Amino acid sequence: MDFAGKTAVVTGGASGLGRATVEYFVEKGANALVIDLNDDLGAELVAAHDGKVAYKKTNVADESEVTAAIEYAKEQFGSVDIAVNCAGIGTPQKVLDREGNRNPLAYFQKIIAVNLVGTYNVLSHAAEAMQANEPNADGERGVIINTASVAAYEGQIGQAAYSASKGGVVGLTLPVARELARSGIRVMTIAPGFIHTPLFDGLPEAAVESLKEQVVFPKRLGQPAEYAKLAAHIVENAYLNGETIRMDAAARMAPK
Figure: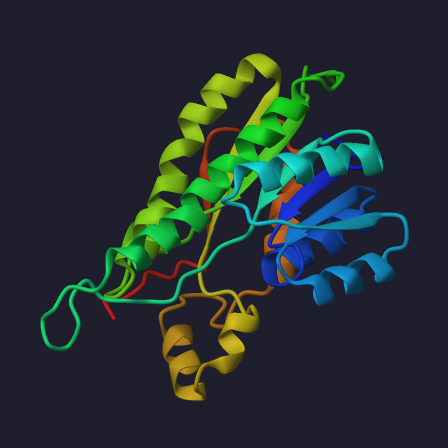
């Protein structure tokens, strides 16, 4: 799919992976609706890309709010052609605390609600809108890109909820791609490794260095711009469908 004149809806688009994706897609000729909960950063992106970027405060796990966001994208730009799910949370918590007592179920439910239910909520709304688009020469009407994590495969201690949510995103990729093929919509997932998003800024230097040691090559943290470039390649390469791509420089996470 060519970016020129297309509209991308990007969740978590005000910072980190989502922000890099918005900026790169706009550079390549697309319009973008930023879905996020950070009004200040959302307004900043809108101001920096006059007329090419819109912002809608949205909880991805809320069905009515996502309905409103997709409608807003169509009002602002005329269509929804691309959806990129970057919104996610992942504060670690063990199943049992130090005293051996189980931690509350509410934590697990919150992670699943945002990372997995939120992803499904946005992709289903986006697919509903995309099926009305005019197909291109390949019969393509839309592209959906989800974000999993290498934790879907090698979750660390304390990542039970996060790993389960991201494993769910990996698991839905192929069946949804098979279903939406009839509508000319491709579905892909990216599983990033250690990417230097704002979440890393609060970590001690020793912790960051420990993570780098798990990376094979190049021995550094990944950059959000590298995620954005992979997302753009997925959009442009019509033969990518129904698969999860690890973007991790061959890293394999240790148990802790």
